[in-house]
Structure formats: C-alpha cells, structure tokens
Amino acid sequence: MSFVRARGAVRFGAVAAAVLMSGGLTALPAAAAGGSTFAAIVSTADATLLPQTDGAAAQAFHQVDLAVIAEDAPLSGVAVDVDASGATGVVELSLPVGCSYSDAAKLHEHCALGSVESIGQLEIGMRSAAGAALGAKGTVRFTVTAANATVDKHNPPTVTTVTVGSGPDLAVDALPATVGVKPGQATPVNPVVRNVGDQAATGGVTLVLDTGSGTYDFGGGFGNCFYGGAAAVVCHFDTVIKPGQAYQLSTPVPLTAGQQAQSGDALLYGWDVKGGAIDTQLGGGTPGKGAPLTLVPAPAQPQAHTADINYDNNLRISELHLVSQNDLAAVAPHRITGTVGHTVEATFGVRNAGSVPTSVFPGTKDITAGVMVLLPKGVSVSALPKDCELLPDTPPSTQPGDASGSLQGLLPHAGFGAHAVTRASGAASDPSDPYGAIYACAVRQVLKPGAQAGFTFGLKATKALKQAPGLAGVVSAQPDNNPADDVAPFTVTATTVTATATPTPAGSAPASASPTTSATGGLAHTGGGSAALPLAAAGFAAVALGTGAVLLTRRRRRSGHA
Image: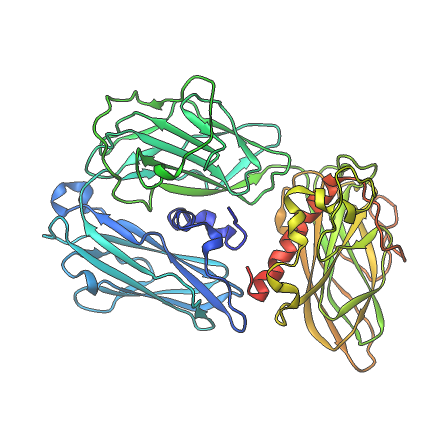
C-alpha cells in the first residue's frame, strides 16, 4: 500500500480506513496539471443508523468524516455545504464547531474550514429522525469549495446513503496517533474492540493488523492468527461481543522494526465480524505455531452469524515513529542565481543532527551517508564533485554477481527502490515536469554529532529560469529519527544578463558555495571528479534509491502522474 500522497491521513482514523478499503491511497484522484486541485473523501458511502426507539445508544450521533486533501498546494477559503434534504424524515444532523444551519428544518449546514495545508477534516454527526421506521433510506450530500482551487475532476462522489437499521456495529478504540518503535525492541499492539450496535456479534470477530510498507514485523506466532497473507496479521476469535461490551487481546501482538523500517510509516488496525466485508478479503497467510491468542473477558458460546452495520469505525491508522538517535539533515542553498551559459558553484550536503556518530553502510568500506541532488530542468553540471555520479534514467541490466563496483551497476540489485529511478508514465517528457537529472554522492567519513560534509557542484543554466525548483535529500545507514529534515528544497534563477552568482544557504545548516570545514576538522568533499562512483554495496544503493523514490514521487506529483 502506498502512503505517499497523504501521510498526514494517519490522524484521521475513519477517513483513512475508508480510503484504504476503497483501494488504498493510490486510488485517490491524480493531481491535474495546470491549476491547483483538491480531493474530497467521505469516510463511508453507506451508514446505518439505529432507530430512536432502541434506547440510549440510538440517541447518539454516528460520526461521518469528510477529508479535504490539498493535491499540489495549500488551500484557502475552504468551505463545506451539507445537504440532508434527500433524507427528510430519516436523519438529523449535529452541528460541529464552525458550522451553522442554513434552513429552519436544520437539514442544510454551511461549514467553514478556512485554510488547509495538506489535509483538513470535518466530522458530521448523523442519527435517525424521531419516528423513522426500520428500512427508511435517504441521502446526505457534501459539496466542498476552495477560494484558490477546484475539486479534482476524478473525485469520487461525496454522498452518503443513510439507512435506519439494526445489527452489531464493531468499532475500534484509537491507539495513540503516533506509535513509537525502538530498533531491536518490541512495541505491544493491543487495539480494543467495542460493539456500539444494538445486536450481538454472535458469529465471532476478526482482528487485522498491517503496516504501509511491510518493513515492520508482527510476532507472537499465535495459533489462531495467519501471517503474511492479504494483511500482515489476521486473527480469528469465536468470542461473542454483545452491545456495549468491549474486549482486548489477552496478550498484545509484538511489533518490531525491520532493517529497512522508516519513521512516518502507518499502522493499520481494526476488527470485523466473521464473514463481514473486511473479513472476507483477508485470506492467505501462514498460521502461527504457538498457543492461540484470546480475548479478555472469556469468549461466549458461538451463535449464528450477524452482519456489521457500519464499516467506517472498524479500522483506524496510527503513524509509526521509529525512535532512534540517528538524524541526518539535508543541506542546500535556498536560492541559486546566475547567468545563462556561465558556471556557478553550489554546495549540497548533509549534517549530523543526531546524537550519535554516523555508521558505515553494510557491505561498504567507508560510506556513512549519501546525498541525492535533483536538479531543475534547464540546469546542467559543468563540474562534478568527487564521489558523485549521475543516476541513469533507466537502471542498466546487470547479471547477478557482477562486480562492476559502480552504483549504476548495482541498481538492478537494489531491491525495493530500484524501480523508483525509472521515469515512469512519461514524466521526463512532460512539459509541466520541472525536474531534470538526479545525482548521488557518497560521504566517506564518520560524521560526529554536529558535523557536516558537502559536495560543491559547478552548475550551468542552459536557459533563462525563474525560481526553478530543485530538491536535495540524504540517506543514512541507520533508521532516521526525523524524516522531516531529510529533504531540502532550493531554487535556481538564471538571467541572460551578467549577474553575480549568490547561492543563499538554507536548510538544516549553512551551506556555502565553496568548501567548508566540518565540525570534526575535516574538509567536505569538493572539487572535480569522475562520472563513475565506486559504491561497492547494494545496501547503500537500496537506501539511496529509497530517497530517489521520494524525490521522483514529488516530481511525478507536480507533473500530474502521481
């Protein structure tokens, strides 16, 4: 599953779950070129509301979530209009903060969300109207507008069909929005399941656990759980959960970080009734060989199967934060200015913002970090620093065991990231794609906390440019504690008249246009070099290409191919 386009969705449990159930975040509308757009996603297309006559539980509002996702730029003046006139006599609406009724019948609401940086959320409560009979149906429509953007033309319908009905309704209690995982240590995962419906879940229940990248591992080996199938872990229980009851696992499932685990991943967790819409999609996997996992309190005798009536509260998502002392920060000039056809020097680098020295990549002799530079279109390299090389548009074919010693030769063996450097979907030829070549540089010294290393490129603009965007990124041999500083943006402006080149440093630490001395007293790598870089390990190549994937993903989002 891809979490590239809306990593922030981890804090929106029901909406995120709905997006995943509808095909994952890759199913979101693709950003359109030529103007800002946004996507609007409702947490459920169908909601079942308990009748008002069924006691106190029926009086509560069922929350339907709406997420507004900025696809290519922050949004301003975001507003949501809710129209429940299609469910007159069937539904009543709650009034969230920032909303007001716009009619006497209280079936229309206007809600002001204001500015949305990446993802905005609105929760609208719905409950059955007094006197609405079982089986009564209606529709609630959401219309989203923004002052500076239009809704994506491929946006799915933002309509929820409401039905007055009866049945079990399993809901999962939220885990912390961010779950910390320390390398080498197990983090217990124990999501609570609660029946908020008006009938018992008599056929048993199913637990599902998964992560976005698959680089985290679930353990336990429980005999009633299946590992590595449609989801990372699927466990079946015969427990009958009556209305109002809540259960948790007798033993939490241990979660550990794999070798390639990174912060910012997502933990998916939730429940379903046996034979339900989620449960029936969770086949495959290998059964555990240990004792079965149980629920507390003890399970009741199984009875006939009953169906869950609402699926927007069955699953939730938390962000996984890899707790580490390692933190490498990208360093890049904020602005690079010059004249067309003339060389200007600019230094890109890495700073150790963590509390421990960098370590050597497995399989290499002395490579401790990498710097990736994604240049704008219209910028060429006239002087390539030592230990830097151009990444190819398409990884070359290399036979297993080829000891060419170059990063390019290792690309086909780089595992999860190798495919990322291919300019797929015609992004390279798209006129709206602002990015050009990607360069990779190897740091061959241990960087103590606070130390940095840089690579001074000779850059030459081949055409006039105005704040053309570029990106610099860093890669580390160890999990990074703060991915937010792994990428630093920069711009290039080139005129056709004489101008003085003035790279202006920005990012996590100052970067000059000339060689700088690191905190350890060693000089950063600078000067002219070769076009072939002997990075003799697929380990470094894989991680470097992971960063390359991030840079190319940003390229493809901007060009409308994400």
